[in-house]
Length: 335
Image 1 (cartoon, rainbow, N blue to C red):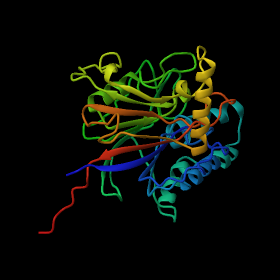
Image 2: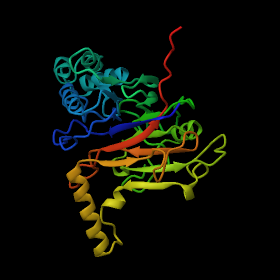
Image 3: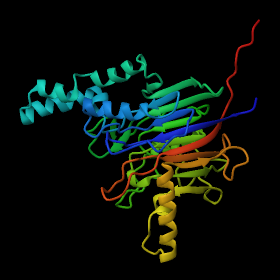
Image 4: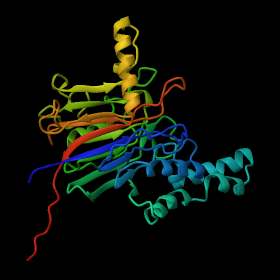
């Protein structure tokens, strides 16, 4: 059965910034995805801001995961921070509840929105999720909000000295995580790799069609990665990626002036960025017949969709619209 072309809108790290607008984005898509950091300080009002933003997207299905800033969705961390605020700063628990809600209240917002008139927004816990899309395609997703951290004192974090199991099965079409895998679109402002080794290994073994994330704001971009035939038992970005057959679709380096750019190159980048900003998104297609088609089991498109820039002086980073082919639904035949 022929695969079905499917359109995705992907964003991340909006941080409830009320300056972020998707109003220029008029395209209808099949699925919208938010890869976490829905809020900046995990306050109830911030969740409402992001829910309102998601409701402006033209998609029948909107998939959402948490990020490290969304600690009130991580009940044990919410409890820990509330106790610390009371013990260290004598903050009245009633005042905390007013700003952050009681334990579990943030999650209830998403349960409520699914039963309201604004249907289509689905919060994904860590694990495998399957969807029958309105366009006739089948979608299998692995989702995880967990990211490595030195202190692990925000939501859904584990210490870098420890590990986390990302149980991605080979039949997954799309991996949605908050943080990047180590080695792909994860270079920080300090020129270090901020991604997770265990996540990369899990993705390299499963080889999904798409892996989308955010977290490392300065890593915004997309890359079509070709996998080596044998990625090995402990794959890394050095050993598992066939760099000669891979291609960077776009990155901040291709849109912003660099140290060694000529005046002509700077002018070209500026004109291109202004054109994309006017459109309101960066579109890329990876279907059969495209320049870099994604072939299941052989290649993966990675997309860092962090919207908010790392530096305040930079403009809003662009949402991604991505075309991919998904397997068609297998419908039961009448007896």
